[in-house]
Image (cartoon, rainbow, N blue to C red; front, side, top):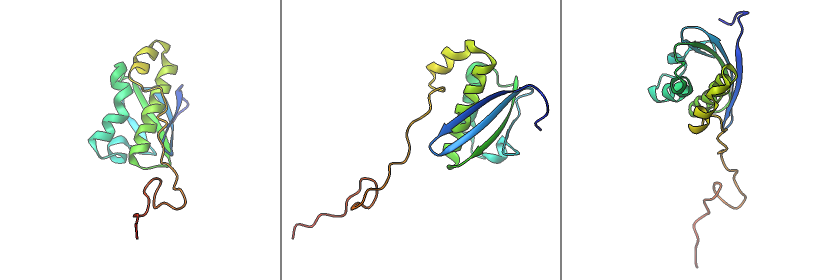
Length: 132
């Protein structure tokens, strides 16, 4: 689907997922890793998350998005795509910055899984304490 048409690029990240987003003028089709959005993310909730920046700026039917996403799970990938679309939209029109910023779509979500510590079962869960 990617042609020699002019596009706007944005990189999005969330947890361990990285999304490379290309926005082109079109009908509003979103292709993720060669599949349609509905096929790649069957859940309605994740589709809503992904399309949030387009819906917020009123450009849902104006752009086609071609996305390559790797790493993480479904939720992390959806968040990365949302971040990438928001950044790409910013390159199309700089006047969208206040709306995207207010919705918190330009900020990379810094929350990642905390590492496991020695002597503990998980990051913070300690083994049961025994008095005697």
